[in-house]
Image (tube, rainbow, N blue to C red; front, top):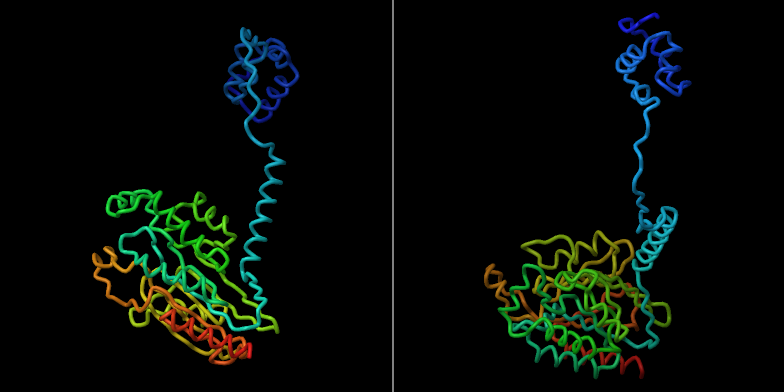
Length: 356
């Protein structure tokens, strides 16, 4: 019987592979090749043919049989369809959020009360002043509200230890948030989720609280297209904060957004607990663009003391009047007031004059 154990060639490799493919036993394969079973085993080892070694080997006897459970997962085709649907929903939401329409039915001038970071549960929050301003908004016709963010301290994670340094518990904080949001039930144009609010993630209680009063709640930012009878539209870009800061100009972020962003009439930010204002003309559209940074009702702030931050607090809020009797390119279309009572008086004057 011929032996080619030491004569491995590509031609013989093919012969061995063919013998394995067409044989049921090692003996059959060896016989077709004209070699012994031992030589066949050597050939399989040399060529790396594990299948040759396994010919006519008996499968192990199965003594138990386990039936696996139904897989706990969505079939792949259904998962793909669901994920594509989720993307469509997210894309549609992002598109409609670019400019949210606000239709004002009254043609008379209106005002926007812009609350700086309330932090209603902080010991340093001037709740008495906030309550006065809430009542001012409630009793003033044509005055609506926007909250720039950080309704509560909302200490979470490693910061939860700070509840030990304040007089209100987390539950009492949300109770105060319900009071604040609910007090202006029919006056809210928008409530922005600040960094403190967004620490709650998908479980943010403000989603539920604002939903109870039908108030628009958006994390981080909201851009409004305020539309009046007659065609006037005033665009307000409101964020908890804008990118860009300057030690020389505390209104730098909102003004940068006005110059390099959407070119809106009003650009509002909070977050830094300082007051600032800037104004410039858009050379393309001719509108006057206002950048406003509102401070906070958290007047006494241990963090500011710790960091040595200077007092740049003019007011915890701002009141913006919009004179609908003027075209959108008029430089006096919008006026900004740091003293809300003065702004409310001016708004009442504008509305009386418009009605006359």
